Amino acid sequence: MRNIRVLIVDEVHPSMAEGLTKLGFEVETRTNLSLADFASILPSFHGLVVRSKFKITADLLENTSLSFIARAGAGLDLLDVDACLAKGIAVFSANEGNSDAVAEHVIGQILSLAHKLHTADTEVRHGLWEREGNRGFEIKGKTIGIIGYGNMGKAVATRLAAFGLQILAYDKYAPSADYPGTMEQIFETADILSLHIPLTSETKGLVSTEFLASFKKPILFINSSRGPIAPLEPLLEGLRNGRIKGLALDVLPNEKLSSWSPVEIELFAEIAAYPATIFSPHVAGWTVESYIKINEVLLEKIKAQFHL
Image 1 (cartoon, rainbow, N blue to C red):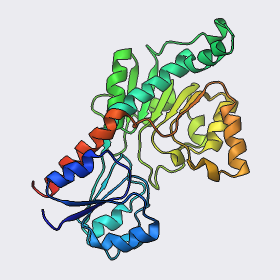
Image 2: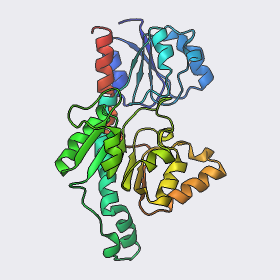
Image 3: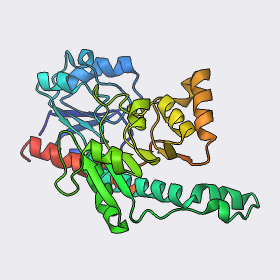
Image 4: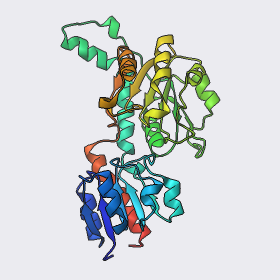
């Protein structure tokens, strides 16, 4: 594999560079590049490992001779996949690497909302011993709708089955044989909704006021996929009218908090004022173990690509 050069532009676990080197690739790690510098040196590499530092556009790829792009994460919304395919560039993601982490995170969010663990903890820390106000509900016997039945959705369903929930999984492109469900069934019966779909032109803004109005019961709403799938405005409206009785967001439409406009700040503040809300900074798949497993998945895919 000599003279096949691979550029790593994001902070990833050292096992990626080590693994690529063992496979015979020439590896260069440059995590402090500006976009201009990145664009200028990219044509001299045959492989690219990226997480979320740069958006890989058709313009960036125009003068390159890349064989592959490996994204150290699950989603590919920061890559122009069509442009990659048009140039014969193999695109790898590592959905399998952090599905366990996402599943555990989502279950933790559900249990915290159902049993009011987050609010009870805060109150006790502030000297309040309010038992009745923190009476929760059991998730056994409830119905969860899972939209998206890829690695993440399957991992969540597999673990939640042990809790005695009725599971309905809907995936337009990969229907579930284990827990088949339609959107109509989910709208009709779901007590909990968890999103596990990629951000595409089809899913952007999927969660609207009309979408939430389709649910026959108030729901716990969980989003650990991508923020733009569920804009904050309809989520706030759902909290106001009671269609959302609990909200857990690991992702936001705009995750660069320092760039928020006054409108965004006010909108988020109003949502956060509801006690039945939980937020985390896009870390559902961000564990000690997944940091390594993501690399293991990508290295196996690269090995297969080059028949190593």
